[in-house]
Length: 282
Image (cartoon, rainbow, N blue to C red):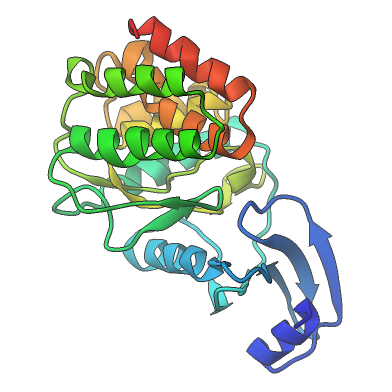
């Protein structure tokens, strides 16, 4: 079924115009003009499409937090229709401080354990979220070892680097500490997944949610330099950042998004992982 016919079947109206947009690791993204509105469509006609998972994550954030996200209009594994949110992925100091307040608020949403009731997606990859009492165990097993071993199976991560990762993971408690409580995170906060106007954030896109130590969210924002000093100053004023985060734990937590990028792209991301492991003696 074509995109236009799929939209008509879902909404009961035929789109007037469809324009391809950039981005979208889970499906192709389009701006869709209707007779009285403009919406965004994600479309994936592959048999293993799972756009319904992205819809579930957006709905979870809308129902359980104050984080601004697109509203889901219709969802199936192959088609996700959402409201079209204004803004660009450029952040003034005011917008950065607003982003910090929004994420600090998100991180007050808690659960009894780490994980989520469903597995989710990050960059189109399966993200397991089995409920776990210990954050260090969760991060070791379901993030580092799961993604490292999958990357090795896919021949994107050399076996010697996987062996070093496994050795490092066995000693995580040297550097990581258990947070006071699990916190809901967006899970994929980088530049193109945040929209803002001159003053404030208008929407967070493409979530990869679960309950975690919120430091992993902060770490992710540093990996591709999404935000600058105003963001971290504002966040720390609301939720103090524990000593040692920027010096050590930030790089440890960024092994996870590096592993995601190893599986998607390989190349230099393997080298970046290797440098982090070497820094910690592995």
